[in-house]
Image (tube, rainbow, N blue to C red; front, side, top):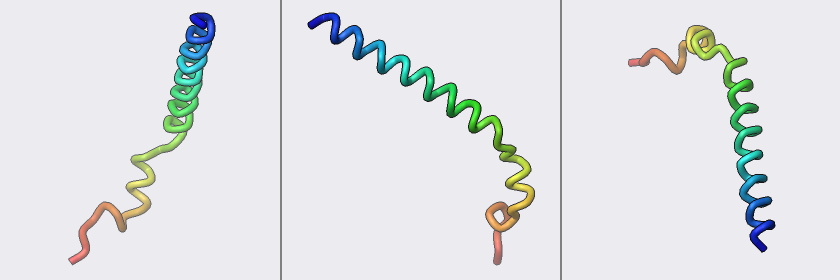
Length: 47
């Protein structure tokens, strides 16, 4: 029974590492400053 808990915890840790690396590379590919420069509708207030 302990072996199954160790495997489950290890699997969750591996999923967390892979998911966080995936999200890091996906978010680093976006240029957020350029998006805010192009889409001025969200950045300036309209009166």
